[in-house]
Image (cartoon, rainbow, N blue to C red; front, side, top):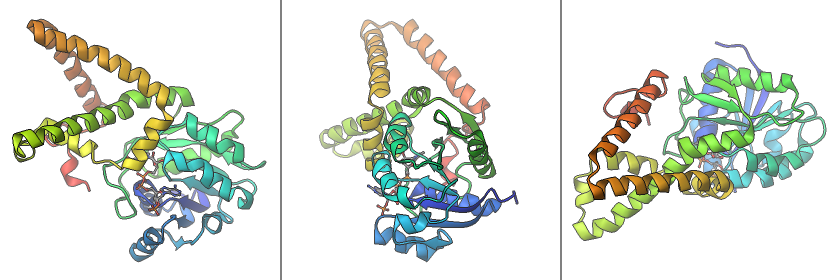
Length: 306
Ligand code: NAP
């Protein structure tokens, strides 16, 4: 058991990330009490039924009362309004954080509502699955994954250090990063790949009508991996693209140029270009495995997880 880091933690939004945080906090005894709130009665009732949170509240304001740490775990587009709602009842000296996949937009939407005397330390755990909702979380989600802290100008270093201790206690490796850099890095490593997966599955869906369901029946590894990614939550991903517009468009532009170069190599029979390209990309996969960020099991080791 690690040491308790916060007396009371409030989780606003009770989906995959919040529920995983709750189980990870409990696993290591990192908080005295964890309260939670979700906007729908259905989610709150599910949370109560499965014991998610020590106390599930019927309003966000009630959940954050006396909390030492409030973590906004709602889609990126909902962060601003949620923050505006809870601002008047935050405890002086409390820290507000979030887990949003985009950082510049969240900072712009949330920071104006942070009251005097309350700390704001944005964060983003680089861990997830294609599942969502209160029943999808598990304590091991953050183990050996990165969690990035994105402190804003003037953030109290002690508040950042305390949040770091929480994420480390939940099993994550922690780094600090500037918001714009974060958004560009994530556009490359997560956002654009998701868009490509959505597109490929969309194309296959069109073709399915032509090939009489053979795309599904004979689905092979490449396509199956795309469908897993393309099954991710539509609201979350809509918000990611609407709020990380510039970085995603920049990376998509580069992607399109590379795709055209490969298309040309195929058309002109330039095997050397294709072989060199695929050799380079194979090395990147090896680097990810060596960094401990995936296993080289044939199913990427995902079969055992939810
Ligand atoms: P999720 O499982 O879909 O849960 C989202 C939660 O937010 C639900 O409790 C939902 O309430 C609530 N919510 C949705 N819209 C809302 C609104 N307009 N106002 C108030 N509450 C609202 O989502 P998640 O995967 O945990 O994602 C939460 C955050 O983590 C997002 O910002 C996402 O970008 C970030 N993130 C996700 C992943 C991932 O892989 N999933 C990874 C890292 C970070 P109801 O259940 O009542 O509808």
